[in-house]
Amino acid sequence: MEKRKNPCCIAAVLLLVVGYVSGVLDSWEEAGYVSGVGDPGMKRDGLRLAIESWNQCNEVGDETPNMGSPRAADCFDVYKSAQLLNTQKKCSVCNAIPYLLVHRVTEEDNKLGVGQPFLGVQPQAGTNADLYAAKKEIYLGSKCQVEDTPKPWQFWMIMLKSGNMDTYAAKCPKNGHKVGPYGPDDQFPCFGEGCMNHPLIYHNYTTLRGSTMKGRFYGSWDLDADLSKGMVGNISYHSVTWEKQLGEGSWVFHHVLRTSTKYPWLMLYLRSDATTGFSGGYHYPTRGMSKIIPESPYFKVTFTLNVIQGGGPSSQFYLMDIGSCWKNNGQPCDGNVTSDVTRYSEMIINPNTSALCRPDNLNVCPPYHTFPNGTRVHRNDTARYPYAAYYFYCSPGNGQHLEEPYHLCDPFSNPQPQELLQILPHPVWGDYGYPTKQGEGWIGDSRTWELDVGRLSQSLYFYQDPGTPPARRLWMSVDLGTEIYKDADQIAEWTVSDFDILVPANPK
Image (tube, rainbow, N blue to C red):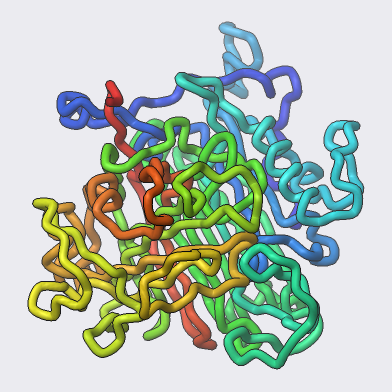
């Protein structure tokens, strides 16, 4: 990683915490909602941000040479110089530089890799890169943590993921079960041995210039790429730049994702994950920003999204992506990758995306649709079922009582089986504040969204074994971003700001 630009790391104040700025709009408070995230509306000057990279099956597998474990963070507090120097007297430095950023995470922390101890303590991971990354995330979280009620929180999370998978390497389980080498498999791109590598991740630590705070993570999966020349040639690329004016407004996160011939299937999301326990899609304890886990039907999500470049026709740009985990009998997940099931719901706003769900293709339609008034219609009801509202539905690979016809989800892209429900702009979602027609929220239509995600997610179909009590729909991950699906040399670019998750002040 690059040498860090800010030298102002003073050990004596690393444990100090500044109060967070509320940021919850009065109108929401009056309506009985409070923020469920540690940094309401992304307005806190002292930023908490981390980045993670996963391979196709949400594991690490192998670290990229000289990059360490693919977890890093940029966490700092803002102090008045006089406060930091413990002086109220005449101070020429204080006049010249009235505020300083004090970073909590060093470059040495961010470059830690398998076998290296955390502050002298050896994690129980041995040479297992998957376990080490999970331990490293917890370690970085401890350095970034902010004490708060009802619980402490750690950071916003930038997530990188590659769809490349070497089926001959046998690194990914199938619906949670270990399998041996097989292939070829055209479902997954792979240029050959080593195609599951993690990207180069470089870091410009946040600095303060005048009243502007700015920092960046960036890199490429093409390990021979010369990034000093920018996005020149057919190379993959990721970049997230964050910027804010001191004392005002929201952080603005500027995302860029580019695919290449070698890496045509890439993902980049900005997530609010659980502060403890599992997050959506993982079977390791994680850290995050959601100090209150939102539960259906009682939460809303607000943010401002500006899509600048769409990422091509195969960019599954998610206005909203929520992830949870429960077993098919409705019980919460416990880390057993053969019986846990990751559940996802995503709205795709790329207007190039047309519904795969049709009366002549029922296997990718959820068996039922529920309207806001509670009316439920079966997918065989061609007069009333809103086929165009659904892009794609797939069933969990360990479901024992699936309604035919069905289509099983990709068994490799999560450590455990998964269930996926992808929706499209359609009038049936308008009651929840979601886009009702193609093109809304897309390029040239920047908007601030107020989505009733909780009520919509309660109405969506998810599989459960017959006769079992309904699962509590707790969404440990709430995020947005894009998945460019097997389409080389495409660029997606967008900004996100003002993100918040609103939950009831007095939960039922």
